[in-house]
Image (cartoon, rainbow, N blue to C red):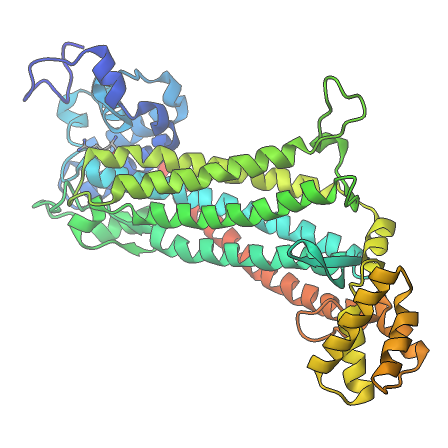
Length: 484
Ligand code: ARG
């Protein structure tokens, strides 16, 4: 540790190992290793093109960077006194090419614009990966919904029977909320994919660098112009983490319903053995552990977000080392979402639907009472409020007297001098009839759910194209930089 390229000038003492380990970012810099190589190559190439460093030396630097990338981070001397991956790579480069050549790479640049660039490069790829998995989950939901266009089920409000629906319609509610997650991530992507490179430490540089050139080489869609903001802001991280928290909230609703619906009491679905566990003592048990773990893991996204917000709140301009502690929170949220998306998709894909039990629930507990009131409005020319009162009274009496609602209904109608054929009462109380007449946009009628599926499919195709184009663009950028 005698000749530390970072500390040797200004500082005379090396901190104790404990201090170095406390402050280093190397353990989580793993995530930005490749991005840092790309960033170095793009910067070096621009320096050569601008004549800021000699062409021949730039070429040697880039060749060596590619070798270092190929050998991987594990091959490097991860000395914590070098603080981070930026210095580790530069140190290695200097070891290989000598300081007179390799020492030129950091001309007109700072670790501050470097790390901000690296995080954006890695994050954009992670977001695209998340989008791919989200789109895959949407497709699984669609094929499941197609199977269950006519599978009667009951809908809940307050977790009490509300109105009949179909399981297909229920699944479409998941599809609908997850589409907004796709839209949010795609929108946020525009604010991730902009280049802070060239902002320097905080005031750019007096060298005649070309920020647009490095932007283009790295496949960024724009610049974050102001150099103070460029190195200081981590709002793109906050925004992404907020989006992941919202996505996590949506996924936790699906997990919760998988847990609830697979209970003996609901009994409308059965999870595949692959996504369940049993008890060490109770031999009969089939527990929904994967969904439970997912429900819990997704909560950590909110903790991560609040931690990041709290670290960043009231930090002065521009770079503060505090920023380093935000990044691992981001990666933690990213990996939790990536893994959980896979689990949720798998649970849904392998799920067994118990149609008979779903129908039984839809038929019981007066979930069709709204349609009976609506029928009174149409057939007896009374207001909805009056009809609501009459049906409510009939349901109360049917429960109290333990009688069939149709019989009670006839008596109650008589009391109010109204007539409605028994057959019409029966039809109003038929759950499938209830579903069929609800063909308004967004409703559960099979024909409407089918139409909705068609339009989701089209939009999902568009999202997928957009994501694939972005992935291809990044692949090309990487290929060009790493194959020079
Ligand atoms: N490891 C640092 C981080 O993650 C890199 C930037 C260090 N810059 C500095 N001025 N110490 O933020």
